[in-house]
Length: 387
Image (tube, rainbow, N blue to C red):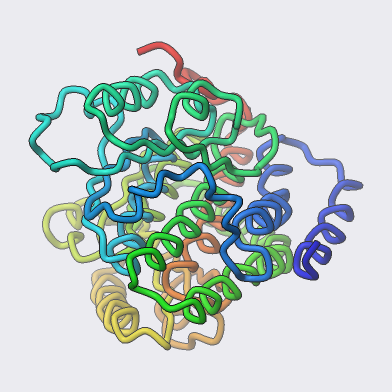
């Protein structure tokens, strides 16, 4: 067992003694341990584990295109993976709503590999998409939290997450471990396609291995800070979540969490699209949740950050209420926002795994404040097994 996993396991055991009022909060706190288990399977000591990918067909490495089919939170993980796969592995990626895949023209992408993502591995729409892909003779990969699920058994390759049982309906640890598996798959495909050297893959892997401890250290502070934000914004009924690049997917996930957990209207948008219509909604009671993290070793990330800072300045002058996520050490964002939640430093694509967690906690705190049974939101089930 790696030193990183040992430390995360030790910290996790400390949380076992805490009495959590809801399964969702407990599962948020379980994420460092779930991530450590998942990393230990796919990238132990920062290196790709060939045995973990042994079921992946060899032809997958020669594919030029991928389709990711998923629903709900799993689709948001797929949207983040689209950016990872395109940026790091040089693949063309199309992310489909699983419910739409079967009705799409067979000529949209020629001979892609197909990745289905589902917490349960039994979601009806995603299972139908998997079966349609198999009928078309395409290579299929299933990423699920249940290695014995129908999808895991039917796909050509099963890449399970190691989140453990997730009881609450809102996805938390299953989402972050999906991102972890998708990132590991991205590094594998980048290596197979000659887009990365082995040392570069290991450098990315070592950054991934740092995440469990970073999360373990940050979650308690985030919990209290999000409680304060929810108390301060208790009269707000509409929220706009904004992110650029890979962070747009996390903005969508944050908005989905707020909708399903706290019954508040929330939408996720690319930050650059705010002024193209949605800005009409912004008011004192319709705050902006802006993902303004950055990786200062990445020129593209720096550019996106500078554009986000300018947007925040414009919105602040307009009178908007701003809840921001910024990288530790940032001095500009706190001065421009009513609330600023700091995210530990890591690489651009891995920031997604960290920054989604305070958004989960924000949704949780709003739900608790509104007296909602956050583990069983109305009209929702854990797995949609009937269309």
